[in-house]
Image (cartoon, rainbow, N blue to C red):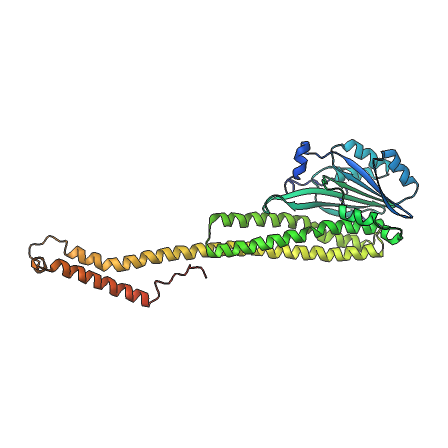
Length: 366
């Protein structure tokens, strides 16, 4: 008997989105219009069908044909709810699929596997994340995906690959397709982390060369992005292993092996996030060290000037006194003598400081 985590299949809303809304959602006032199509797995191969009514989709299910129902956009929640009810989807799963944003989760009952993830992408700048929720349900003979918004279609690469295939029952297993969908979403994290890594390398070099306050702000922005990505990965570390431990009957051997690889991928993503977060800390420390070195250089320069001009100020102070009996005041060449003496003292002082390495710039670019 499989035991579900208490409250796992209920709506678990986030306090805030992991990132901004998808840009194309703003065109529709924040909610994308609902589009529905179906991939029917027939004996001759998968066939994609569009424009089917809810009754026609339910009729295909009653024929015993494996279906992949793809829902894009949450603009018409009543239509989506009616379709899911006709497909015998448990009512408890409607809220996690239709309410956004939900926490990432992987849970199951005896006859259903539910996955909620977020598709993350960069906006115009790598410092801005864009989020889109993707919910997936696996039931006997039925796979349902609900995407908050998909401007380019529902998983276009996988769809094109499926439609181009012919026959081969093992290529039509819905549990394998579920694994491919989750894998496709997780694979998108690696290019993002790689881009962040390159930006952090450039940022670290610029901080060491010429530190500026805006560089520290950029480091904080990247750290916030990594925290959001880590927040999407953290729940999956435990939940995928729990799913595998329960030996879900809907998952075949190939899908189970795929989920094992997925667990390793999640661990790798988590480790990469931690390494990049450590690099953000290193940039902050490098910024503080660079600013400290520059401040020390400024103080050293001021100390050198003070050391050179202190004896000159002393000499000028002596001959600036107003005593009547001062032998040097009657010298014809007294003024040039004093200037020469001050120049000699300044030169000796500067030479002595130079020999001790005080004129070396510790903040120079190397």
